[in-house]
Length: 123
Image (cartoon, rainbow, N blue to C red; front, side, top):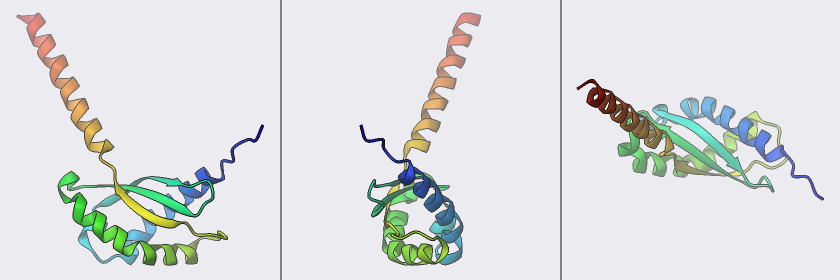
C-alpha cells in the first residue's frame, strides 16, 4: 500500500503563511488589505494551489476582489518564488471562501432559536 505524503499539506501551510505576509506588501489595492487567506489546497503533484480568502466587507465585495487576486496571481507566484525554497512554485488560483459568513449566519440563527425557545418556556 502506498502511503499518501503530507508534503502537499506542508507546502499549503507554507504558501498560506507567506501569502498572508506578501499580499499587503505587494498589492496596492484596498481590497487586498481587507482580505484574509483562510485555506490553501495544493495538488498532490505540487503544480497548482487553490487559495481561499475571505473579506472584511463580506461577500458583497467578493467578485472584484476575486478578479483582482486572479489578475495578480502570476506576480504573487513570482514573489513567492523569491521567498520560499521549493523546486516548483504552484500556480495560484484564488477563490472566495463563503464558509465563514455561512457559519456566522448559522450561529446567529441558532442563538435566535435558543433565545426564542427560552422566552417561550418563560411565558
